[in-house]
Amino acid sequence: MINTLENLLTFEHIYLIANWGIIPFWLLLVFMPSHAITKFFCNSIIVPLLITIAYVFVTHQIILEENILGGFKLYLGLDNLNEMYANESLRLVFWLHFLAISLFVGSWIARDCQRYLVPKFLSIPCIVATYFAGPLGITLYWFVRIFYAKKINFDE
Image (cartoon, rainbow, N blue to C red):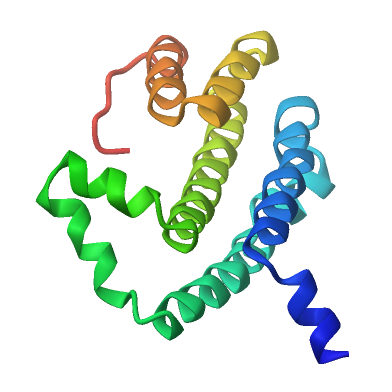
């Protein structure tokens, strides 16, 4: 049983499960942003908790590999960042980090669109852009939001 679990918990399997597993939540945000199911899964701690479990597991593996200081190299320059991404475990932990934060931002956009009555045809491109290119999506939404909120607000 333990050997089977170890075979399932490879970095590749964790990546595939997280990567494909996040898509239904993004689809909920795009197509059913105000539905109770979306609120339950995308606006709660459930998905971040699942990603956190994978994150902690991969981080534990990094510690076991004695690669704990590898994360600090990213501040030393772009070449060091490239070296870090060459390490499978560090690359995966960064990807899990990205998945959690981008879903959080996408969920915030969906809720905020409801708050300011942003039409769905304008919210969908912002949410999709956030999934594929986080900063671009949130910036695009910010410009849409200015129009519907009737104010420019940098601290909300």
